[in-house]
Image (tube, rainbow over all chains, first blue to last red; front, side, top):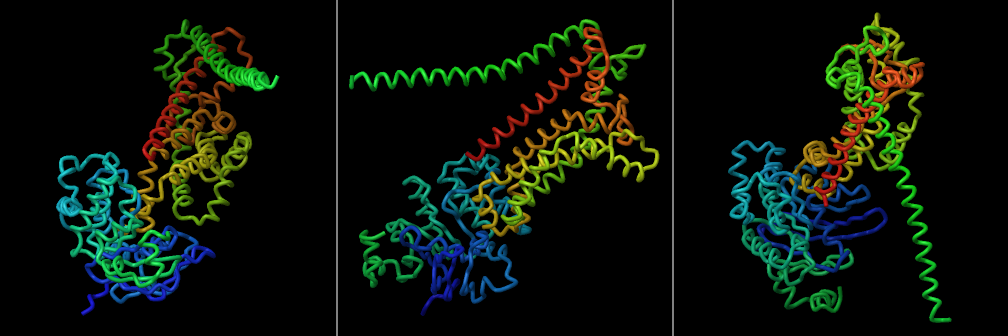
Length: 251
Length: 303
């Protein structure tokens, strides 16, 4: 039985001004799986990711065609509030981007703007624990978040995203600005979140995709070339472009 | 011959470079010397003043009457007039300027921003005497119609016009501060479901606060140093009042009054110029330094 689809794109295309970035992409993101988007720089994997929480709305020249269905509802239908979409579908960015506030306030921000009623302190702790950061910062929640290391900052950003309990977590090359040790920790963390959350992760690191994801989609020049279980994609690619890319002959 | 060529070229360059260096140093030294000279004159002439009037009387006295007997040299009425006008101007310019900056940085389309911002900056280039006339010929009559009993000279007219004058400075510099806030922070806030308004007020403005504060301080400093508008519109009545509808005299307007008058060089009245000028200089210097420090700290926080 096929797992329940959380997100689904139907004939999705994005243009920035006159430039077509992705075209006619139809795929489904199954519930509670980790899906990796791989492909060479400029293949449109980040653009595709940013359609899922309407982050492309922030680019004035971006035009989205086709549909993105979130539990069957079109995210781009008139009347849909982008802010509601982004609360339900959280995001972690390429570069750690904590607010210039305290560690506590970084996480409390999302709770406050969303009118969270319960104990904010409890939720902050739970989020920091979920992001494997609690033990390192529990004694200095009032400290400036910018004083953390890059790896800690990125885990703080994950905690911030988790705090508002999104159904999906989008990660745009979350380890690309981190050193190997911090990257390892990030991958461990994704391993811990795996199974509990639906995660879509863009990565330029194929080994990383192979290690952490259940399913992998290969994009090339704005087109979805191949999308299947990670292990099958890496051991038995059907398309020659996929094979060329994962064996390092192209990209 | 071939061997010596590169040597001679480099020696030639070295002489040229030294010459340019000397020229640049000279022009730098000139501007520093001019500044030092001004400060020295301010200080020495003020020393002459303070030999006759105690600094305590000068700084704490509440009656300013340097020409009429009984003479009195308490500068507080002039400081009062200066701060009254500056505060009134700030009341107008700071909120409006910040709101304009937030609109331009966070809400306006790129096209609007590209049109409005240069227009605002042109506004900052209008000669201040034009603003002075604007105060006397338009704002004061309107005020006098609205509030019968308001004099020809009043602090309100000067404050309103100085406020309008420093508004572009506030909006332009604050907008720079807001635009300098990295987009990654906006994305982070949008990412947890913030609306545009929440992003602007809860993330961008707090992050840009040191830069905004710097623009505020600079604008207030400019209002304090403003001369021609207050001379034309606020009058020449030194007094301890918080009533904007009354005539006041600012420190700058007093300096104009004495400079235009016939106070003999070396007289005590003549020397008040330098004492008042020194205090004015110290106030604006302190504000400008404060503003500069905030800007530096602001830049460091986003490196």
